[in-house]
Image 1: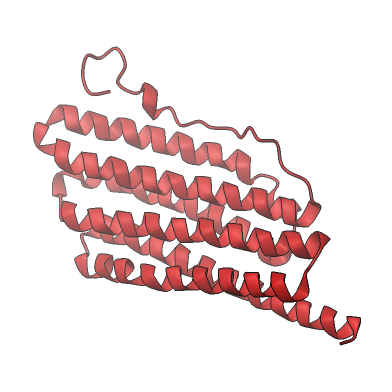
Image 2 (image 1 turned 45 degrees about the vertical axis):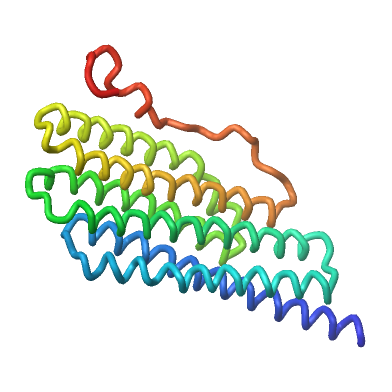
Length: 240
C-alpha cells in the first residue's frame, strides 16, 4: 500500500471522527438546553425526552472511541495526527459527561415539578445556561475550525459562569431562609445550577484539549475560578 494511499485513508478517518465529534457536541448542547427549558417550564414530557436521549450520546461516544482505537492500530499515526485522535477520545468523554449533566437536570426537574413561588429564580437559570452554552459552542466551533485564536478567551470567560453561579446560589439560599417549604425544591435547584456550572468546566477542558491538538503545547494547569458558593452564608448562623 502506497504512503499516499495510507495518508488519504488516515485523513478520511480523521474527518469522520471530527464529524462525529461535531454531531455529538450538537446533541450534548440540545440536551442541556432542553433540560433547562424543562426545568423552568415544568415540562415533564421534555424532561423525559432528554433522559432518553442520553443513550444516543453514550452510543456516539462508544463509536468515536472504537473508531479511534481501530485507527490507532491500523494507521499508527504520529505527531499531530496522534494528538488529534487522543484528543478526540478526551473530547468525546467531556461531551458524554455534559450529556449526563443535562440528564441529571431533567431528572430533578421532574421531581421539582411546577413551583410557582420560585419562578423568580428561573431568569437566573436561563442566564447561567446561556453563558455555559455560549462557552460550549465557542469551543466546538474552535475545534471544527482548527482555530487557536477562537479559544483564547474561553478559560477567562469561565469566570463569568462561576460568578453567575455564585450569585444564583446566594439567591437560592435566601429563598430557603425566607420559607422552610422552599428548602427541598431549592436543594434540587442548587444541584441543577451546579450541573450547569460544570458544563462550563467541561467546555474549558475541551478548550485545553483543542489547544494541545493544534499547538502540541499544554495550557498552564492553573485556571481562573470565581465560584464563591462555598463562602456563601458564612457568619449568618444559618444555611452555609
